[in-house]
Length: 102
Image (cartoon, rainbow, N blue to C red; front, side, top):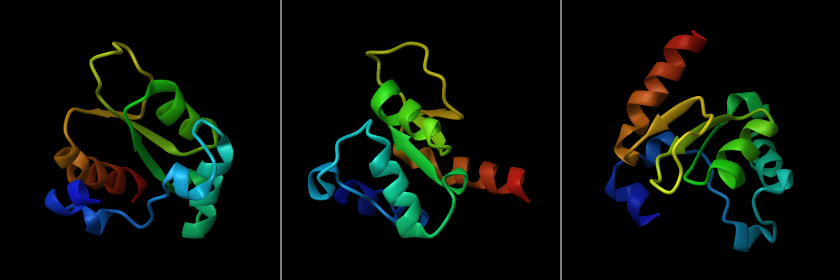
């Protein structure tokens, strides 16, 4: 949360679920579905940002979410809707998503 506030991107975030607090670990689809339910939207209306290709990006995409990969140099090729290097790229990506959906 400190990073989210420091980057001034909290206005782009409606919900954050922490695996330990939820008692469910990624890539279990329950945690992704739970996020969608809390937001009262369909998974296809959710964006999930993560740095692990399987546990984050693929797992989110498997339930229908838009998966964004925060590049981690342990992996080379990751199938994701968007790829970013830094969290401060979130506003730009959200604007792109909004322009596509309008």
